[in-house]
Amino acid sequence: MISRFIAKRVFQGMVVIFFLSILSFAIINAAPGDPATALYGPLADRLTTEERARINRNYGVDRPVTERYIKWTANMLKGDLGVSYLEGRKVTDILKERIPNTLMLFLNSIILILIFSLILGLKAGFNEGSLWDKFISGLSVIFYSIPSFWLALLFILIFSVQLGFLPSSGNKSISGEGGIIDTAKHLIMPVSVMVIAHVGAYARFIQEKVKEESNSHYVTAARSNGMEERKLMKGIIKNALVPFINYLGITIPGFFGGSVMIETVFSWPGLGMISVKAANSKDYPLLMGTIFITGVMVVLSIIITDILELSINPSLRKQVT
View 1 (cartoon, rainbow, N blue to C red):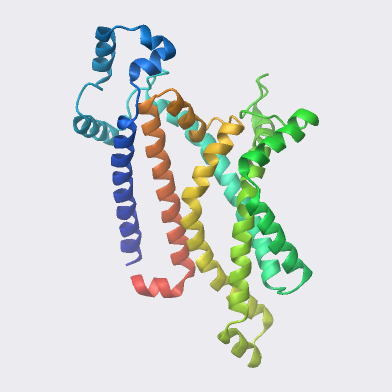
View 2 (view 1 turned 135 degrees about the horizontal axis):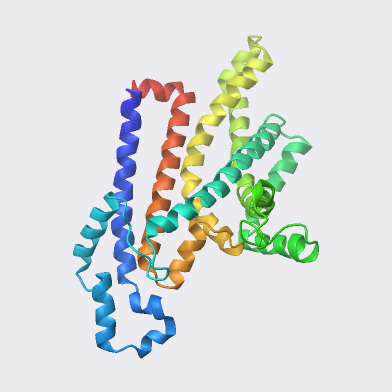
């Protein structure tokens, strides 16, 4: 039954990706621009009508939108997402270079966010009314209110321009230094901005759920019957984590959306940065590829959170068994 639950979530994810591909393809093809504009930029105006028609014919954009979508879908199922107008390379090859960088940024950020959120949220939740509780509440509001792009620019100004401690862009030094330490230095600022932008909301959510569980009737009854405080805390944490994992799954799409801005500001060579570049240059095959792959990553992340919720939620396991 649990395998059926997972299979159902995977099927629902595939349906979401299918409709996402239709919507994205329709919007992109309705936007102004053509391969000639992507290839030649402002010089495209100098092309004759015949030259533009030949370029469009070579890239297949002279065909009806429905026919192009069917062809794109058929090729996508074979692992072919087309050829980038701007770079003249297969979109899949470009994405293979960018996906590891986005995953590196995402995984490091989400792990630190979860660690700090749990520490801060649980500490504040179990000390209701204390100075620590008020401090975490205020800190969460401040972190949540700071615009990410402003914080990113502030970090660059302080740590790169003024202090010179950290590199301001990219994922490796121009000198070709490379290595884990060099990559880690480039990761510090974008990951820090991602953590600050999200840890406040997540910590506050855990804080409130712990308070709700601590003040619930079953906890009061358990205390009056002499149950050990350690066992009570364990049960409270477990019950508070169930809605938190669900909340995490809901907010993951916004997490990926925010990473686009972070990657752009820090010139981090991931999917977010290349999607902005593709949109600005009207490189629609590459833009469609980044949208599709990002959608797949979001759906996979949500499925993983559903599985985590299933693993710690006995009532949910009973519903699917």
